[in-house]
Length: 358
Image (cartoon, rainbow, N blue to C red; front, side, top):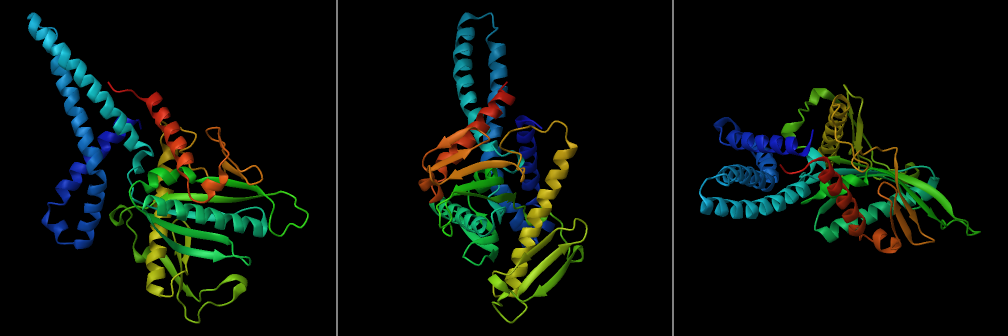
């Protein structure tokens, strides 16, 4: 699916939502109405600009015909207006390309991020914690809301796994490129001889769907309740507040134990499960489509090593686009913008190469 097809689909969905929101049956269900309103709001800016772009294209078609007129003054006027309109439309097309970076989910305002320690034992768990803090501080700079959905701490204060929920404008568009394998090279705190060790963590960023997009019924999954625990198996509480969900059809398992309330843990677990189901659905659709636009940075392949963090050299390298920056200290402290901007610019260039305004 190319950019123009995506824009047409989004405009069609925008019009469909406007129709749905005017229906008495939908208006009577506040939950469904709110979900439609959120989705409609996320598409408003793009749909408005694309409608404007299409109108400009129609106007240019009319001016092109006028430019063939036998009247010299009319031809000159049409050609002047045509040139002006062409420049405006090209600028608008660049704006539309910017807004569609990230494909069909570009304008999602919520996403789920899963960070898991990989090879490297305790050092990998500490690196997973560093990644969590990097993304948390980056979110604070951006004005995004971030919450811990679930966490499995390690003995030395790292994380074997941590799941985060992000909410804010542009979150998925920017964070989607973080999916993949992250490698760190540094001297661990426990290394007495000062040797550099290499360890890894994986990051998965999942677009969070609206409730109406994933039809999840209680009979579709099993709920297991258990006592939340901390590192070493030490019980955090004596009540069964932790929740584990197992989806029957896909076998996807989700658990949340970060909240003391069973109801809050269940609500978070359902959000994570829906995000994983939505991601599963998207991956299946992508396999079926032979015309899927291929990019180096948009694949979200969890097994791909995407970035290396070299602490002795204060160097961060994104292998997908050949980017190397000697400001790791700044990036790991939450200033992710230099990396994000380079990734977005690369994706923007890819889009321009795939399609041109006509």
